[in-house]
Image 1: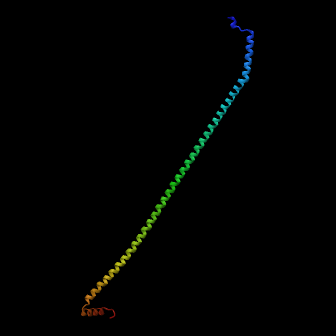
Image 2 (image 1 turned 90 degrees about the horizontal axis):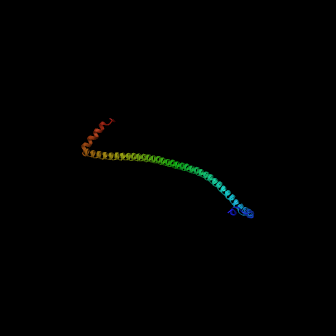
Image 3 (image 1 turned 180 degrees about the horizontal axis):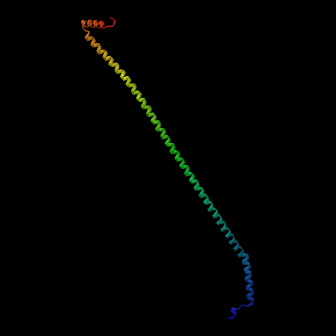
Length: 165
């Protein structure tokens, strides 16, 4: 049993040489590329993290810019709505004023037309009354003066009352 536990000197030397050769080959062939790949991976992860931070900061800046643009757009929309309301109120006020002026003008024209028609009706009524009065007077005079003696009596009375005497 002892032989299994203590190795022979030649086996130790050849095992050490084989180990060193394998170690040398692994260092040249495996460890160098593996460490290089790990280093590249670490750098790519760091670069990705930096780019992610940069993208995050850009997104924050873009979000702030979008918020500012949105606020400006809302303010502009509110201003446009306010301006439209003011314009609509102005147009309505002008239309009301114009309508009132037109109504006043129409009322005045109607009053003048009524006054003119009234004067014309009064004048026509006076003319008719005058015609009627003359016709009645003519009939009365004809009736009163139908007899000759009445005519002579009227002429005598007028002569006597005349201021020429």
